[in-house]
Image: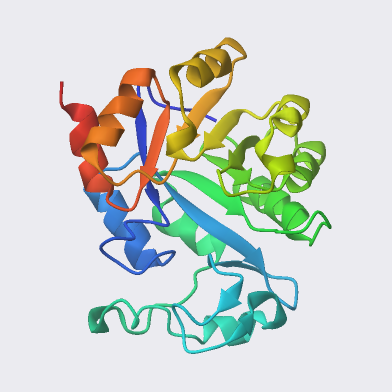
Length: 248
């Protein structure tokens, strides 16, 4: 994947503080703000299609209920996922990965977060691999996940895809520990921002890995992480992050 020099700014689910998360409106706004890239969440529908949405259980951003995986692609696409944020976004739909690439992929780097909470493979990995091949995304996109087995599957199917290992303080102990990241040797580490230390950054860089962190929403934290040498900072207010990394 071709990364620019210095610390990058990625918009978390798009410019999600200003537009409904994981929608084309949020991605387009982030691009207009001048970010380097966007992060968004990918799940699989009941009938085996990819859809962009964060929550496993519906109800927060749409008038529906139940696990997303139990809804068909057509039913999910019919849902309004913009009105909850503001009337001006009424009619926003869950986009497909193809729509995101076609809409902003020529302007932005892309971080697909693969959603799968189970160690049982749910079919997302091969579909994403196929997408990367069809749309030739190897130089401008990567796949991240909290799920080590899903990342392992991606890398086994297509070694050219850059992968990022996500972890946070509230995960089960087994997944917080670094054993699986050492075995997998991802291209990038994606820790929650409070877990980043100068030592972590130095050790990752010595191994040839990048350090990407989330979700950063204030300039002071962004400047501190930038001073540590973090390679990418992700947040809901990408304009604040861009302002922070440009200040001396």
